[in-house]
Length: 93
Length: 400
Image (spheres, each protein chain N blue to C red):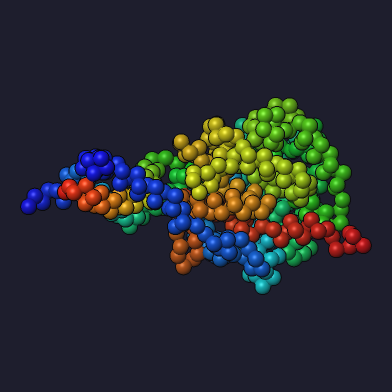
């Protein structure tokens, strides 16, 4: 069995596992940034911080958060549709 | 035919993504919906207001915490330090008026903030709470004073007195009112300077509100001045394209520096409600027409009409593509709450939960994307109502 197909970085983009693994990866990276305390740096939005590394960390957190809220769930739901459509077409996912 | 289409992996993938997006995106807002009871006050302050107030009271009673927070604010903008004090005191006054059981808790906090603010102004002069450019040139009116400082302190004193009279504050309040009136009347457009040769409607409308509070408390009558001010504003300070009041102009009122902007007009409409409710509502409706916007179910506000314009210290950074201004959106809460615009308020609160990054802990709540002044403005939007209602009803003896 080829284990590389379970590697999220090598999985085909348009596949059930490709969607699921990337969705989960986004959530995992966001969770890590959250646990590292990067939420505090989002004060860049109100202009409270004054540029530099803090803003970069805040922007990174903001992007990952947005992807976790808007993109990851779409990828995870799409995994189910991918399975259903593969079964309907009689092909392997 | 369909089976053949779906036997193509990319076709299956794109179809799956589209179907998933159709399911998720219109429903994502449900995770950020807030029940109205969380932020709209009934007989008591809503839970969210109590959570913000709890943290702020701790901030004002713990010297170490306060020092850290104020230093962070002052390093960016000394005005924020000042405005955080004012919005918080105004909020506490409204919370006390709404729920008298809170009065004994909020009064000492209000007094300590008022006393310290006045002391700092006396010790360091007006520039302590102004941005550095206040020193670059001379105020047209001498001796130098800023209506930004006078108006907001006067409103703190007035609302404190409205909650419970304090004789020491009566004189301080009356003196500020006299000074403001004397200076406003020297300007052809009845607006005093906030910065040298720079008058802001934000500050002058707060001054008007504080004078009106004084009328209610002391039985004075400045209705003739208010009428002249309104006539002058309609004649000189309305932007022809939008019908909105402009934000800043020179002392003579001949040169407009900043046209209508969100970080000014929402609060101006709130203050003018005390002076002329119809004109205020008209300005609020125009502001929603030109500045209110949304991304799906998530509401926010532009700084400039149509979202076209630069960012500045008042707007905060403008988020590209969305043209979202944190400054304007924060004050839009005040506008929407003042005029009972529940649909907009619900959309704004959804955005707050989505994009302001709340952190809940034992002290209460703070919004990481915001700062102390932003949180105080938000608190004010949840607390406001009782003070204005009381004043608009008139003095108990007026109708007799």
